[in-house]
Image 1 (cartoon, one colour):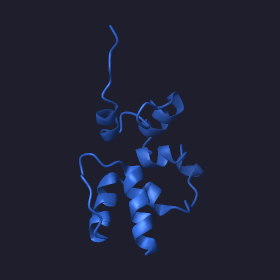
Image 2: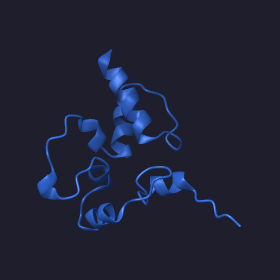
Image 3: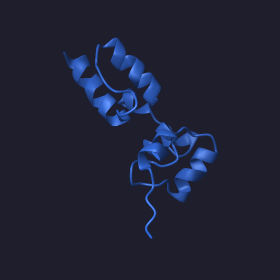
Image 4: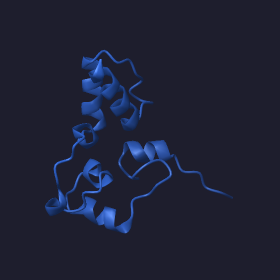
Length: 96
């Protein structure tokens, strides 16, 4: 019997890197050492590795992105939307 994981739920709780992609051992260690999931997803595994990220949106949490999207008048379903989609919509709205 095959077990099916609820990847969306795991992603919402930062238990996986992305849908269908678990954290690597190195990434898990970075999370345990205090790096945020957003930093680890961006490839920053140690505080000394942190460099200025050109795209500040990629470092924001989903909640902050949702607040920013609302300020820009973007309509979305909070429960269903992904961070990536919010980032894309915010970028498009900011270009207008």
